[in-house]
Structure formats: C-alpha cells, structure tokens
Length: 123
Image 1 (cartoon, helix red, strand yellow):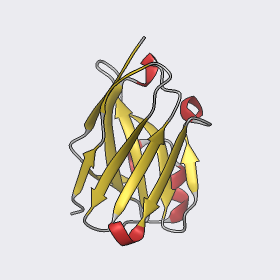
Image 2 (cartoon, one colour):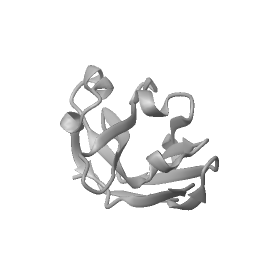
Image 3 (cartoon, helix red, strand yellow):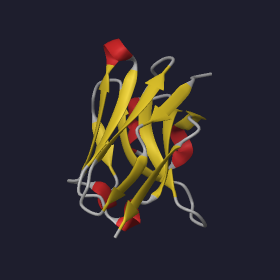
C-alpha cells in the first residue's frame, strides 16, 4: 500500500495562492490530486503519470500546476488565482495500471489516498 501524506493547506483570500505537497512512499503509474467539498462528490483536479504527462480538470486549467520531484518522493500542486469555489478538502492519490488511465477525470484509477489537507478560500 502506498503511504501518502499531504501538507500545505490553509486559509487564503480570493486571488491568493497555495502550494500543496504530498510525500509518497513510492511512485505508481498515476499520481494526482482530488478534492471534495461538503455534500459533494470527490472530483479529480489534476494527475501526472510516470512519464510526466499531466491532465487537469476544466475548472482549474490555467490556474493549477501539478508536478513532482522524484528525488524527494514528493508530488506538488501549485494553486494560483484561488476563488471560493476552490474551497474543499484536497486529497493526494496513487494508483493506475497503465498510462492511459491517468487521464481519466474520475477516482477509478486511485487505489490509495492520503488523509487530506483543507483549503479554504474567502471572498
């Protein structure tokens, strides 16, 4: 089982930025970020495969950047131009059996999850 520990969440005003980090015990085909607001289903935010290809949800394109530093076993999510609709618990995820799965904007490929880090954006 992949162990994932998120950090970097917090409270910011609209227009602000945050960088989330995820320390992973190992790499899988797909690594990514999901988020879930109260009363809503968990939704995909961004993913990256082992070859470096990235995918983003339409709602965050142009504002979020997913990246990883292999030597540090760390996955990042740079979040800019935040707005109140970005408020949610953000989860790091690992899984997938093939590169094509990483582009799926669903939790289907995710096998292991972190405990989450809260992001709150005020108006």
